[in-house]
Image 1 (cartoon, rainbow, N blue to C red):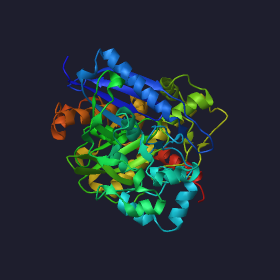
Image 2 (image 1 turned 45 degrees about the vertical axis):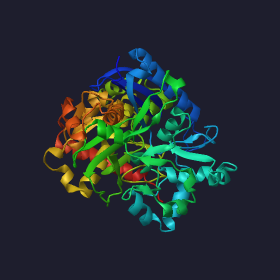
Image 3 (image 1 turned 60 degrees about the vertical axis):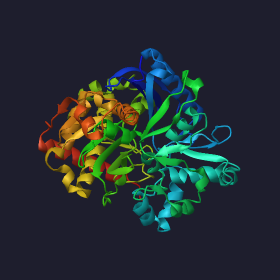
Image 4 (image 1 turned 90 degrees about the vertical axis):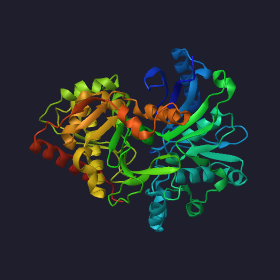
Length: 500
């Protein structure tokens, strides 16, 4: 065999996956392993770093074995990852000093509130495009330095390294030789100036974070280093890194300004490509880096929903009313149309455009006849309503986004396999919803970056021609019914928001 294959590592919030693609970006083998979530306190979410590493290594090896490939057959590895999840590890041993603090974690809400009260919102927004929120890595780093004995002293001495999951995996894959990340992950730290493309000294000082902790920042498509030979029977170059939502944007070929995609995994994340300049949001969205190629950055407006597929997990694991996620659509379809039950899934607060860290989940509209069917419909519809809130905010910030052929939403992620959910999404948005042939667009984007750096795949404009539509869902709900349902949702959200 020739080195014409690509290995995508897709490290997510609840599982790790590896997918082998051929040189035409057709998936030929995959493996996936779930790992435990840890909830040590209300609003706290953690992962064991070794669980992350072991599942990544195991799935990568399994996918290669299924494909019948060895290291010499792989032109490059692309890594995509859950963003903002924060790790600090010992540079000598590679062992983390604490469990990973997951992006959903809200333990630094009070610290963020103090920063806001002290008037630092404008500084953070103007440099990073972000809001001051527990979601991002910066205050998580500060918490680890302040709460792990000796961590601050060791960080200042250069003994420790910070990274999001991509950086931790790169360190492990290269045997501790490379401490780096890409621009999309750096942009989610609340420490990175997205205009200059560099770590920001003022923000590091604000959070009292030593610069010695930080990784080098590179393009999304670059030779990041080679894997240790013993891992896969020979070295494989790591050629691409992007945060999961940016990787999905790339996999969806959203390279033109105005194009928008939404990914439905544990959370839901919508990104609108705004071109070569960041757009400052007036509607509590984020400005972020969509991708960086050849030293040039493209920007996006992003809306983040913390709970999407996680609401389906709650139906399964919390309430026990379904056995598997695919049961939810048929249940929802059988729900009583006369009941308007709303779930506001603020289990770990509300993301964009509300950004209320203290809100908590609630069910509204319950009657004596409400049951599993209505709960399932409410869970799926909550994702649709939250997406509507994001799209309307995006169009308000950048009106040209909704003009002409741009008024289409490209979707991906595990939830979009449900026809019922996608039809309801089109109905609630009153927009066409396009589902691609390849649903695993996050892994596809990572593989594309690796293939681009390896010289196997074309530049973005030609890659966009390869995108294929599997099905378009068109709005079919009566305007009066849509208006009534959306009004009910907004009333439910208003009742859920905290007083703070």
